[in-house]
Image (cartoon, rainbow, N blue to C red; front, top):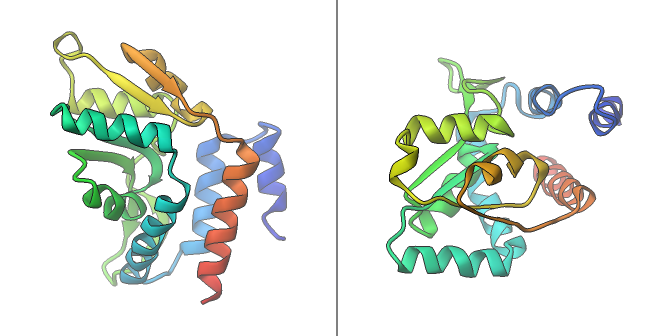
Length: 179
């Protein structure tokens, strides 16, 4: 696989998450029609249903029942998260946003920094700046969530191994791109 050096460099921490993601995204999606990319997002939302964390989902549903404002803050692309978020009437999502050119094709770039690590806290506080005015519950499943978890009043880390996540995402996107 041509991208193996990138993945190894990322795993060994020679390149950042941001850099690896930009290279992989550009390789797989540059030039793709935006409508097709959104269709992949709709398909991906069905996959989320298969892998969602049941204890985390119970907590989420409880927060909704209590009338809490619920955000999804993810390094994933807006188009991959939004269909699932709409299904569950999420109040807002904060994601990595893709750049689309005038011909409605993906450029391979992002219009925002990768929503990972400290960027999650930065982007959340842009929307909810009055930190002393709310009690924050945060749920995460990766090291990229740690800064947001540390920022929260209550935090919960649901662990999935990196190998499991990479395997799922690569299998999904490789199968999708073969269609």
